[in-house]
Image (cartoon, rainbow, N blue to C red; front, side, top):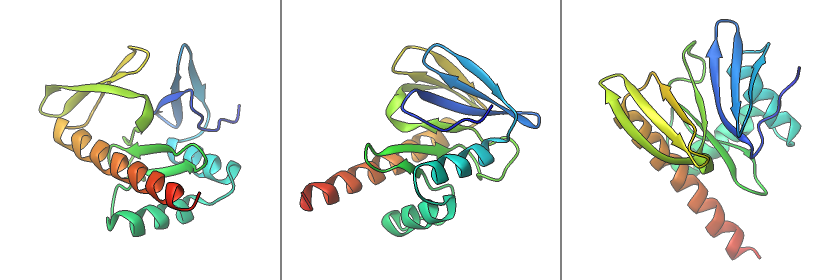
Length: 149
């Protein structure tokens, strides 16, 4: 089964050589690594992962763990919890995050807008920084679109 990130996507979680994709009311086992799903999703929406990454780097002035604009009409932005190439990298959809809470030093609970919860192996501070980065990217894109409309 092929999978493209959509508004229904909550998170993409690595699971051995596969991915668990969490959506509103479903969970899918996809026979691709999370990074491959990200690459294919970017292509599906008309760009390459590297093109999306380079754009986000330029906009944010950041070099690593940049959020990715998978689809730009609706600012569908996802962010990685670690290096996108790391085996434990979880991808989270920005607009679906309602809240997040510290569990312990290395784990954070993400609460989505549909009240589903997911514990990710990532510090609270990292999640906070990644959400701030992705939110800034979203804001800048919205401002640019407003100026050009």
